[in-house]
Length: 339
Ligand code: GDP
Image 1: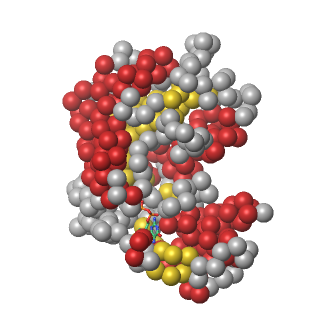
Image 2: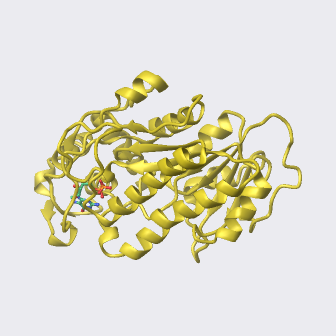
């Protein structure tokens, strides 16, 4: 990892330039692959920590044709405004994908201040930096279905009132409304991708889908005997992350900045996901799963199902991977990792 070293040969050719915050995360890594495939030069901002949480990018990082030629990583925390400004000034991105933030809803009850510092204030700081730039990139902010909390209507669309019920949801609501405010008041090309849950083999291990698929794989190989979960009744609209980063890119190719709900439009319970995952390995989950109060939430969103019809109409996008296939892809990847 180069520390804020910028390419001296940043080509002035026609290759579009993207900057990604949260590049080491699930979405950041898929988006990087998508943009490199499309011929972009990609800059990514990486949080400095004592461990290198960069494994999702490792394949690209060790690819001599890509790393430091078309992919550049820079260290900064989201609250290092000066450093982030410097990276923006030197990399001169056409598109900025703001994906970084503390993204675990359950953890946001334990660390609400950190959640707000990065997710809420981090976004405002970024908007303030962009506002002052001569060359202003188009901005995509990844928002979340958690902004709706417990909505009156289901499915939700771009005009459903925001009524968050978790610290993460409150922080995302602040960030989402600031993005809209800067679009309207300062004429920035700034968009919110209101994403429902999207999963993949790269999903963090503490999210319920990945926790389940890793356990299904390990139990089937005799490497684990049980799985502790919280509420099995929680319902979510679960899609496949690579589908979602495609929509994010399409949003920035539109003539005007706008907000879009990105979702499958179908909701399932944690039980449904357990059924699909354990079916892949031919086991009955009820024999292995126990409920544990540690994983119960103080409060959580309910009836969160997205209406993706605006994205279908304007972006020509639909989430094509549905839950049974998603669970299968994830279990298979976890089985491969065990071998
Ligand atoms: P998010 O909360 O929607 O961002 O996604 P999660 O994957 O963390 O949680 C999805 C649903 O699974 C919620 O309704 C959780 O309450 C429920 N859930 C049940 N057991 C667990 C668990 O052990 N871990 C997590 N993370 N969620 C769980």
